[in-house]
Image 1 (cartoon, rainbow, N blue to C red):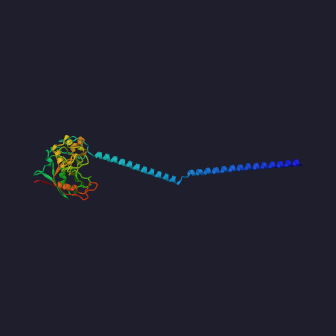
Image 2 (image 1 turned 45 degrees about the vertical axis):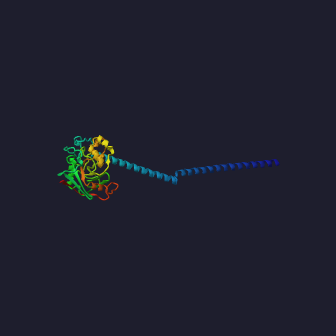
Image 3 (image 1 turned 90 degrees about the horizontal axis):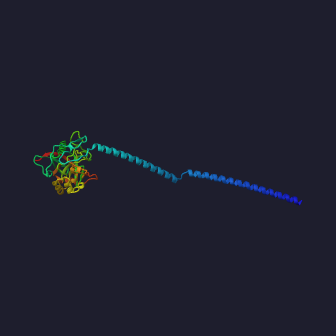
Length: 340
């Protein structure tokens, strides 16, 4: 009996162990399944987090977008500006005269093909005698008088040596063209400039009907010495109504270099001496342009013989950043008179 009973207990104990092991196995499977579910949830959450940008990231993207828009806008503006500049340059080139060499004592009209709209310089002229430019007018000569708001300026004209420029100036005076016009550009120790009815420096016209401008007249033994009256221009053969009076008391050689260079390249001895004594703008003498010594050239057609103190007074007025007098200096009346 005792042996059977022992076997029964042993069998029961064995059954309990199996049940317990089975329970643990089931529990383990449940536990693993739970872990897998949690891991999947975490993975999905991580994916969502990656797809959603932070505030800092959104701000950075917006900043980059704005920078790109600005760069595109600036680029478009630059392209438009370049196109406009190209058109302006082409237009300017089309409307300018062709540059050529100028030889002292010969008319440039004989050696130059002029642009349409440019009146040719007269071939009927003589070379001024040495020092003639600085002499007083003789009895019977016709001179120009400018009555300005600061005093009267009298100008000796040179119709024999610069006939086209003188004819232009006298014709405009007779028409009353200069009456009421201001000196729009004034630079002390340089020059005073007028003759533009718009007062801007961009206006004016020549006296020759049907033409926009007239040809330069260089090499006439006339120089931009202090007191010289010269044509203002915008380049070769663009003379209109604007003129300037050389006012400086210093000798301004600039691109010419010095007195020796001036003489070496055809400058007259009397002119070199006058420049040293009186002052003037040597580099504006057009006859030297062909030698590559200057980029400017201005036709001298007159000389102030009375009223240089007035010229100095005008040059000394207060101006703005564009060298325009703060208070207008006006040519109240311009007229011609015969010296007695």
